[in-house]
Image (cartoon, rainbow, N blue to C red; front, side):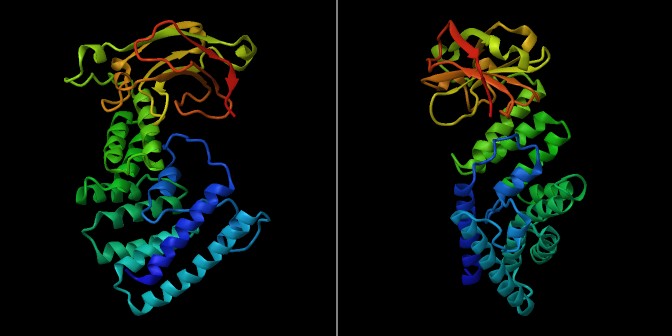
Length: 346
């Protein structure tokens, strides 16, 4: 492995870590926006930046963490310059062009990233990763739109490698933006299958799957054939109410999601139902027939928390201004579970 490329990778990863510590992470919005996958999927990792000046390595911030970030950016800029010079002498180094493209992406230099990844595709036309990276860069250069050529490049990547993680993630985003929620969920499930278990990307993909399934209205997956009668019959029931103090914050047509998730570990919903504010208060029943995917079922959990959320946007993923409440941890099979929506999501 080329030492310069290795150093670039380390610096970008270090910058990511500094950025994660320096500022609160954004809420886990649905991955329908291409930027989320753009930032999470790239093999070297893309850092998140808040100030255009920082992209140039200018120390515009005053905190120690921000100054460190600016210094890291300056160091990356310097290494990019060295890599550019080396590629002039070794223009057939596909790995070098790939790292250069990812580095440009990290600095928001998307047109230059497009040029670099086009070189990768030319040098290695049978490798899926180059097409996925090129689609990513073209989408960002076009204002974060995957429509048109980026979508075609993603399709080509999947032709070459049906299990390419980045291509699967981006293809799911294309399907979601086309309102093909069933296909989006299927593609993201395939991406989860090859993603690192428990990684941030896997968790975000799981959130996208839940959102896509909620919007699709498709029949809920059936319990696995080997489920025992006791597991298959695991049911939660109870009632959801809205606190009187919050009634003025909710419109009758606002969506209400009621869902169960494991009391610890993954936040992926195990079962979910959808109502409207005008239905409140209402009784609910959650079981394996309301699961979001065959791999995540209510009967697989020992303890769960039942949450109810009034979504102003209609998205299952929480957003500021939504209203929410939750139960104490209970075991699947419990009845009379009370959920009071009593706080505002910040």
